[in-house]
Length: 310
Image (cartoon, rainbow, N blue to C red; front, side, top):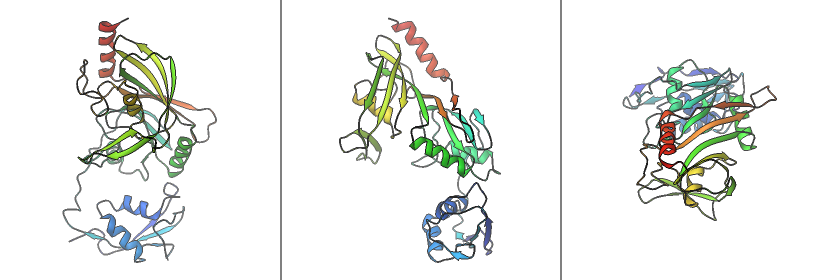
């Protein structure tokens, strides 16, 4: 066995960036590679102390707390996890509280489900001195565009509150197959998650599902495709893609909720988070971050305009 802490307990001074975080979540983040079961074992045993007192896993940390972490051991094979490459996608905006990046298609926002690492792991690897860096929301792996990350716990809490309260405005550009006849359409459909026999997670329209709303605005009409702006009024998994599948106009290039055969050359689905509007901490006027349409999607539009102009 490899001893990760040299048989010496660690004492961590909690700063503002970790204030408000649950003890178990904090430990899972700082004790990377340590089995989750072991983290909860040391919590139950009372070996983890905050200000010399035993704590429950759901206890919240406060700035100035002294957190005692006992020595932990793990197998040598577990002690050397695969590391993310220190890559930083194009930065649209950054201050001391948050970062807005232009996430490329093909990059997951985080590791898991067969993905070793994603944008958050790459950014953490590129900034090893950052004390706090968390995703404020998510994008599908093959969806490009504006992605926000918080650099402080207070900023993350603020962004989540804006998201829950409908203050965060997210606009996507999406190309669908078929003729969309409405200039503006407000779609409200309940969505449910399920798992396929092959173990893959999917979403479908179901009366038993959670409410979801998307506002669509037509931007460009072609003979067999339509370009639309989609504004998320709720943020369900795969919401835009499933709405279009149900309405009979699947997203171009969508191999899960669309058609397998396509008349356009595209290795991803045509869905791009083009703008995101929020209130920055301390500011009254909302700020909008924008990401230009990627070159491969712009080329598809140019080709279709030439072939299918009305």
